[in-house]
Length: 228
Image (cartoon, rainbow, N blue to C red):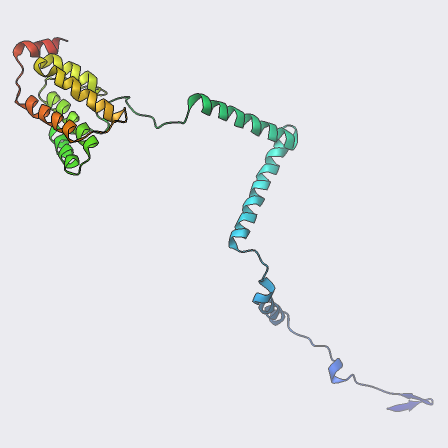
């Protein structure tokens, strides 16, 4: 402390507690991040599902805003367009019914790639052993028709139905015409009519298949079938 012109001028140093702290920037940021990462600060944060839903609705809202800005009349115009589209869709649904899977050939006897009569018979036997009588009847009927094609008693023709095959084969093998029609009717009832086959139905078609294998057409019936 010094005296100048009767005045006392003191040179004070601030107390140690008054000295400002100068913390480097990076350690300060890291300290703040560690502090804010404590669970106490995140107790009321939305969970992952809530955050995902928030993002989804934000995206939907953005799409809606973009569409309403591009449509005539803004939001009201967009709502009117959506209502018209829904009305037209509902009318088509009511008129046409529930869409169904398209079938390549309606009522076609063979619904997959070409297989031999022996392969169809083997499949029928497997289904019969497992008690799947519907599939067994279907495969045995396919075996009958394929066998007649292999014996050239029927011309191979894609898209042929069971009824058509039975009618054509009945002209070539008239002694079995009634049994062929009955087998074709059973195939159609199971495949398209929602009927359920049983073991006797399968055994009848199995016996018909074996009987046809032993039958040799006469020349007259073979020529008549070929001419038609």
